[in-house]
Structures are given as C-alpha cells and as structure tokens.
Length: 168
View 1 (cartoon, rainbow, N blue to C red):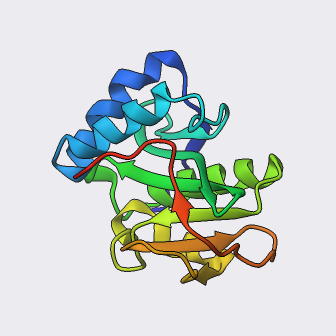
View 2 (view 1 turned 135 degrees about the vertical axis):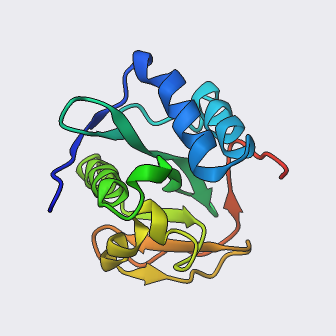
View 3 (view 1 turned 30 degrees about the vertical axis):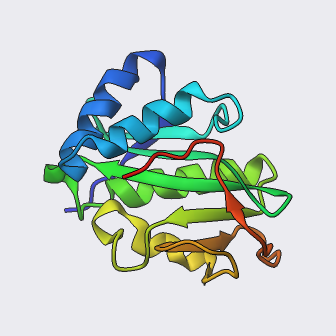
C-alpha cells in the first residue's frame, strides 16, 4: 500500500508538534534546541523553508527545515534536522518533506544546500532519495557534512559558518 503524503509550510500552530516529533525521532533534546535557536535567529531563519508532511487526516508526522549558513562569503542553505515520527519512518513521509523543502529552496533561487549528517545517517528520515540531487563531499571543514547542488552549480569552497552554533 502506497501512502501519498501532503506537504505544506509549517504554521505557528505546528511548532509544539514539531518540537515533540523531533524529540521522538531523535530521542533527545539537542535537535529541538537546535530548531528553536534557528527559529529565533534572524540571520539563520529563512521564511517559507520550514515544511511538514501530514497524513490524510492532517496529522503532522515529519518536518524538514532549511536555514541559512555561509561557505566562505557565499550564502548557502542548510538542511537539518529532518525528523519523522518513529511509526512513520521508512514510509516516505521523510522523503516527501525533504523533497518539498529542497524544491522550495530551489524555487527561492538557492543553489547549494549543506546537509548535516551523511549518507548512512539519514535513511530513516527520508534522505536517501534526496541524494539524487547529487551529493558532494565539499572542501570545507566539519564532520558529518555533505552538500547538494540544486541546479548543477559547483559547491563553493571555504570555511563553513553558521549563524547559530550549539555545542553538542
């Protein structure tokens, strides 16, 4: 049986649900704090790039967030964390919300998306199919990072900087 997921922009009413599904998906508070810190930082927050996937009855079951960062002096987007409620993992909700977020970023003119994590970290959150955008292991420092080119543009090089830095 194939499920068709609905995706949409998050609303203010979704924030509490997004926090809880993120906590359940990752099993810890760090990713929730990460989301809150990025939501609160104007230099990081990109309106229209926080999306959810819902069931047919409107239950929010997955979330993807794209924020701003820089490689050298080049502004780029950053995906992560992507969270899917455990009962819905490996059912396509993560892929649906990741693709919707990447499409929204491309529609805004974003060329590069840095991804927190690696190919083996994200499969349960829908990232495996998103690697069709072309994974690059870029020339910047940082553990567990890769980048996607949304339009074939070469990945910038330089130091990766985030407006929000949380120590894990």
